[in-house]
Length: 424
Ligand code: NIG
Ligand code: FE
Image 1 (tube, rainbow, N blue to C red):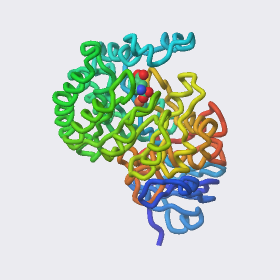
Image 2 (image 1 turned 120 degrees about the vertical axis):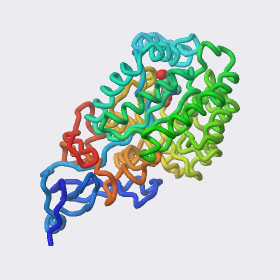
Image 3 (image 1 turned 90 degrees about the horizontal axis):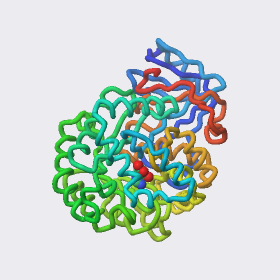
C-alpha cells in the first residue's frame, strides 16, 4: 500500500541528516553527519514522516508535491543559537576607529559600543525596530537559517528592555523562522549607572527580570514551549563574576534558563560560574582556560563559539574549538549577529571560518550549527536534524557535496528553504 504525504524531496546526491537519536553530539559523533546517498525525505503536515534511500521511499510513499534533488544536497536548516538581531542604527564609524587602532572594549569604556546602540534602540519605536529586525531575519532565512535565538540588551532600562521583548514577540508572530527569546538586561552598565554596576544589577534582578518573567508567561513563547533564558556579559568593563551570579540566580529563581557571555576577551571565572548553575549554554570562550574547558566538557552545558567576532574585530586569535571538541565539549556555532562585534547574517560564513581558523572538520561544523545549536536553545527535540517526528526545516543546496558549504566562500549555495514543510 502506498501512503500519501504532502511533500517528498528525493534523489538527493547526499541527504545529510545530522541525526543524533535524541542527544547532543560530542567527540566522534560530531564527525558523523548521518549521510545517506540517493536520499529522500517525506513530509506530512509540516513534520518529517520518513527518511531513507530514494527507491525504498518511492515504493512506499507518494505526495501531492515532489521535488527532484538530483545532484543536490538535502540538509537541516541552520539554527543560529546566539544573536542580537534587534537593534537600531549601525556602528560603521567604530569599524573605522578600530581599523585605526582603537579596541572594542576601549570604545565601550568611552561610552560608545553597546551604549551607542542602546541610545539608537531607545530612540526607535517598537514598530520600526520590528521592521528592521524582520528584514534581517529574511536575509538570514535566505542563507539557510530556520531557527534563531534573539537577545534583548540594547535597552538597559526597564521600559526599553520590555519594548525589545515585545519586538521579539512581534517577530515570532510574523516571521517564518522559529524564534527563542533571551533577556540580556545586564549587557553593559548604562550611563545612568556609570561606575555603579552592582546597583544596576539590583535593578535588573529586582525590577527587570520579574517583569520579563511575567511578560514571558503571557507570551507566544510560553504557548509554544520555547525556553526563556537570562544572559549576562561577564567581562572586565561589563559585569564581574559576583554581579553576573546575582543576575543569573535572579533569573533562575524566576524559572528561566541560563546563558552567559564569558571569556570573550579575558577569563574571569564566569565559565565555571555558569556551568555550576547548569547553564543551557556558555558563549564566546575565546580566552577560556583549559581547566575550565575540562569542567565544561564534563557538564550538560553547550559551548557556543562565534568566529565572526574574532574575524570582524580583526583578531587572529579564535576560540580553541578543536581543543574543546577533543576534550568532549558539546560544541555549537552561531553568528552573534550584532552591529558592533559581528555584523554577520550568514551561517555558511561561520562554517567557513570555523573550518579554517578553528580546525573544525566540515562534518563537525555542520553538526555544531544544526543539531547542537538546536540543543543550545532548548529545541533539540524538534529541530536541528532530519529525523522522523521532527519539524520539516530543510535546505536544498545547489551542490553535490555538503562540504562545499564550508569550502566555497561567498556564494549562497542555499537554493530552497523549507520551513515546517512549506517552501519559502
Ligand atoms: O556577543 N560582547 C557582548 N555582546 C555582543 C556584542 C554587542 C555589541 O557590540 O553591540 C557580543 O559580542
Ligand atoms: Fe553576543
